Length: 170
Picture 1: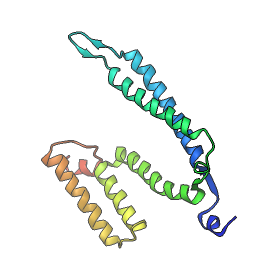
Picture 2: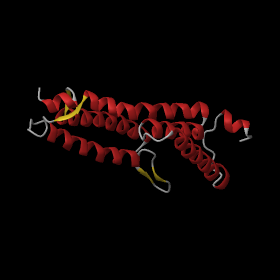
Picture 3: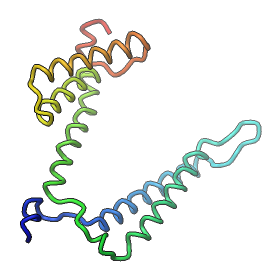
Picture 4: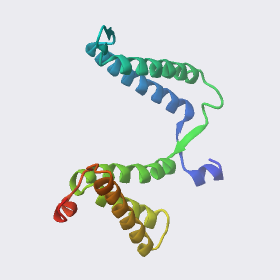
């Protein structure tokens, strides 16, 4: 193992492996949506317009064709395809972004989008941006207040709220 590989960590997936996995995943998704679109109908009804499955069917048809092309290009072994796409530390860095995003989505159901967003932004500023806590608090609270005013007061678009907003009568 070279010193560069030691610094980056053990290779985890090649570009070829990821290309094949993503193409197969999207082909499965396309098949599921196509079957349901056919159930809903993909024709044009006279005097009514398109059936509910028409648009999704043709979108996933194009997506499926693109996935087949990607799969056909990924199957032959090429020197570029065998290059390392990610390593264990790389996956850990991606997880450091993905896991908080998933927690943000789940927290939105319980504490509302404004409080969740403030916590999410503030946490990223402190841990990833290395901002002082006072700056993170100022920005995240300011962002939550501006978003609340914009959506709830000015545009009258209700977004998921939690106990804090309920305590203020919203």
